[in-house]
Image (cartoon, rainbow, N blue to C red; front, side):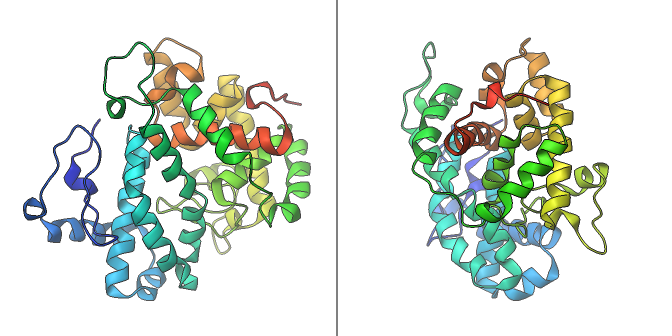
Length: 313
């Protein structure tokens, strides 16, 4: 699926920009700006709580809502390189989210994903995979190409400040659940080890668990949301990963399913008659295509371990 350029029109960073897709560019005069902003406002009302909306000034509210909606749409789309189009918008919106206590939960979520924009931009400039006759921006990069970029991006990074506090306890929980302890580094990719991180889609906590998933794994969301508590969230994430590995028998596929859902991975494996993550990687949602090699590179950097070779207890 390719999204029309109008859907991605940016009312952030001083103007509108169209996505680098097959859709034609729109002149400013052709764009119904009111319609774009009304859509963003509706998204905000449906996905952001009242305290968040009240904290933002009217103009900031429009920028934030518009960006979050479009970023979520890009992540769910099928084009990795299109994510690069929101880089300037992200850098404009992040300080707005950081400026208010009520919106810092979204800032934490976005900050953990800022490198997606840089990675997508680098991938956009690569030649197409061997054997294809398409221009570079009409086909997704190979898994191998993404691996190389993420290794380069992740390898210079020091430990997140909060990781030193949490990692030993999280590893003990993962070990108790029979899951490779190296997988605690999903929390760096998901949230930078920030317990209050919240996505526009409703995922919460270090391990970014969705409400339904959390409930199925035994977490309580009310009166206190256990997704924000490190130990219960880690236990639930470990159990979920164990279940997914039991289904797929492969850690790359399990990590992909953790991000985009078990059903999406199963459908693609069936459609392409394969059991290999690498074979379905270019057809996964854009976020998952970026997420799996980032997780892999992070585990390799932090632990010197290969994701696909991790051993279960």
